[in-house]
Length: 175
Image (cartoon, rainbow, N blue to C red; front, side):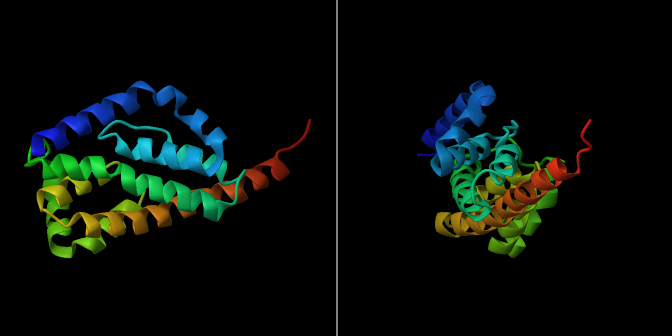
């Protein structure tokens, strides 16, 4: 099972990275497209994908709360790739400086650390997911904590898009 989990993570990461230039096209499909964009953006491990940029833009087109729910749910499911990489026991990040800083938080605070780290836009959440997998945090607890944190983060981006794009349009000087 662990080897299968690791192979799935590698395959998902490769697939999403290979289509990264076309990810924004899924947003044209409404909330299901936003869900897919967020899921794919968060399924990559250590490779950036344009998830929050799409959420920001879609917050101005669709209802921001709906965007946050779709993106937060997709984002939480996408983060399973990091969790599975850690659960597989094949994590290559153990004993790195970032892992050594995040690991005590995840072990000591568990769900609260996952909520906080997934709610803050940062490139290190993949390491927190891997750490939760290594620590054998229950999948249910990890997903719930990640979902709550993703909802918070995606709501902030969706509402920022909702309000700021209108503000920018109203305040750009016309020629």
